[in-house]
Image (cartoon, rainbow, N blue to C red; front, side, top):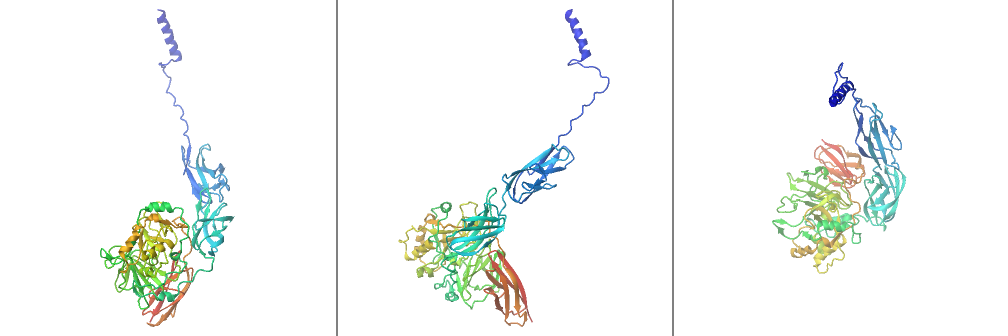
Length: 604
């Protein structure tokens, strides 16, 4: 009874005060509790960025939790930023300071206009600018002590300078000028570059300077009389004539040059056991002659048009003195190989080279590309342009020729091929044709030298001439092809069995000569193409068959070609004899490009 009475009392108490699990009747609907306000958030894009001094970077902000998308921009907590940390406008466009501060990390912040406590940030790392090198003074000097003035923009304290990859002592003058001193150990053409320090170390493009021997001015070019002494015809003897001046890189004695720091890695990448192979000889192999043929022509050879089938924009225009019967590489069955045609003009001392050549109609030739070379000069093709060779080099001066071997001396470097190359070149090359990105692959123009310790005494007298040239002048990488194939001209006087003994050489018997500046897409020298100030005809109107003098004024050109009729010319004028109204085009070329101008001669 007591328990029942107690239960009744508890039940009444719960009805009055409300116990869990019980309910009471409400006098009206239950009220809805108020909802919490939406939280406002801000995000900034990009969330982090590397920005070089003086450069710009755009940021955007996204605001969530409100329809009000307006934000106020700050840098390191300062609205609109500051000169030291960089400024930012109302649209989120950030401009880095011109000089990187001691602490190169800054914060870009977007603050919501709807809620000042809501913000988003981006972490910015400031880097030194990329230096721009525009001029080097002087551009020609002798070996020994060097003092240069380097002008450009974006130079910073601590910037370094180099000559041919060798560091100079640089002094910061201003953001537009450095002075640099050091030593030029050897003669040749070398690149000068400027490198800004960390944070964000970067190098400028390169400007080429010429270092001459301290013994005096550069040697004179070979005389025209020496050129005219070449024997006319296919495979004609040059009778001692050596193409290009004595200081040309093809003719450079590199027997005492330093070994490249990466020589071992490059040789290992090629394969130390890869055997040398003389890619020339007597007779035929599978119906084709062995080697790259050439022809010497004289004043009687007429000039013909060249029709380009592939690389016309990187080719020298015609006309060219190419005989209709000029041998094509691989003749009498050229096949689908490189089909080179090489012609030396003994009358004017020019070299003409065609790639993928075939005879055309009306005496013309078709070619994938063509290049003209002044045998009396140190011509440099426009950088990144090909030639008849993948490296942008002339082919002929790198051939082993029987007339040289018979004379007892080869006085120039030889041409050779490797299966793989990377997207880079070194002087004297101007073009790459990469097959791999491996850093140990050869750049075009790389020179290898037969080690001085290699004993050549057991070889024949003829082979010793070739081996001595490989020790004195080396061989220059000129194209992709079979590994360690050395180029030469076909000649029935070669002893193929004797040449075969050169196959005892392996890549490990060679070393890579110090390459100096290696040019890639990131450090190509910058400069101006030639400027043609005037191009005129005198007279401008004439009768058929009357001589007309074309004359011009130009600066910065290394060679000229006048099309049609005249071809490659030296000087500033040439005489033509138009048979009908003709428009003549002058092409002026240097290492930075080509400029053209035209004039029309009216024939009445």
